[in-house]
Amino acid sequence: MNPDRKIRILVIAEDPSLPEEFDHALQGIDLNTTVWYSSDFRTGVESSRTRQPDIVCLEMGRDMDRFRATVLEIAAVAPSAAVVAIFRSEIFRPEDSESAFLVEALRSGVRDFLRRPLSTHELQAVLHGWPGLKRLEAVHKDSQKPIGRILSIVSNKGGVGKSTVAVNLAARLAKKHPGDVLLIDASLQLGTCALMLDLQPRTTILDVVRERVRLDPTLLEHLTIEHESGLHFLAAPRNALEAAEISEDDIAQILQLARRSFRFVIVDTFPVLDNIVLSILDLSDRAVVVFNGTVPVIAGAREMFSTLIKLGFQEERMIPTLNFNHPTFAGSLGVQDIRRQMNREIMHVLPYRKRVLTAANTGQPLTLALGRSFGFGKALEKLVQHTEQSLLGVEEVRSPTRAESPTDDSAVHSFDTDSLAPETEESQA
Image 1 (tube, rainbow, N blue to C red):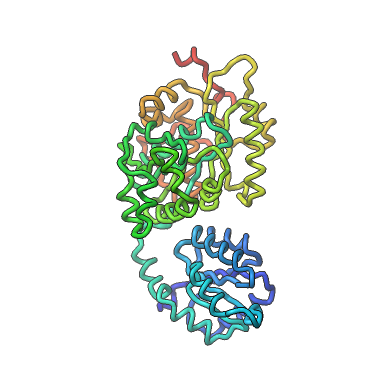
Image 2 (image 1 turned 90 degrees about the vertical axis):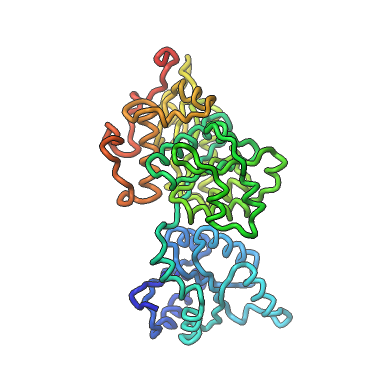
């Protein structure tokens, strides 16, 4: 093992004495390591997502349901990490079968075990003996693509333009990153993205699920369809009966594999917080929360933000997006009114434009025909730039060429609320 290659290790344990014990055991081992510690399972899963460790050492207690669920969450957010269980023999009662516990842990996805009190010899044997660790250096050296990022598009209600935002954002992003963007229509009961792209897919998510035994990133990519914009697309099931065959675990597996083939994975969702959508959110790096300017939708969106925060989806991972998908009328709310009703900042405002609806009906995303200087095109470009920078980091975002540079050079998600007021039918005639 190359001593210059740092091995990233995350230790998740509620026992406050374990970090010192682990540090002591690590001394004298001829490996260059970076070690992080997390004192509870929930923050440990989030650290796995953000840090992408090579190895996760997870404390195992008697609560196997909780332990198993945490292993699965780690596998979902950090698919390349190996999970090593750390345990004390005292957790087993005389009537317990220790081997049964360990077998159950292996079935959950654990790769190896460390018994406490930790010893340098056993820790070294685990680190040097795990075959996957010996391949890490080659994997990191040969991999040309980093792990992709997942952006989910969610709403609390249908009809607010969520799928329109998903399709236009994905298509615009694909024009800038051809071949690196996958749009997944995970609105399983009523997917509409294929119609908006004027595609008739031969395969859907269900075909991917039925290939789960031999599914890998290459097969997943083969089962997608490519749009003229450079976008890859995975369609929703054809009907509700097919949708019923798909579980949240299936969706999680698809997203894990998609991240290995595509730089950006955009996921359109069904407008309800069911297990499928929650599974998608668990894996999402960011979520665009779409709502329009009607009072019932605003009230529901406000509640949705609170619910997501309670479920552990941090506010900084949300991108509140107001979509004016209807013309103005007497008594309609303005941006400032909606902001006060929401009691939160609105990062993006997409102005109403009749051609957006026409484009949805004809299957030609309007973003591919619009410029970036004003109106819907300008607002969407800011959302695309915000997506790039929040998912990849500012330094990784490719600078636009002169031909595609937006004329506006303001901050990514700042906007002039007056200039982005909804356009009237007359102004677009």
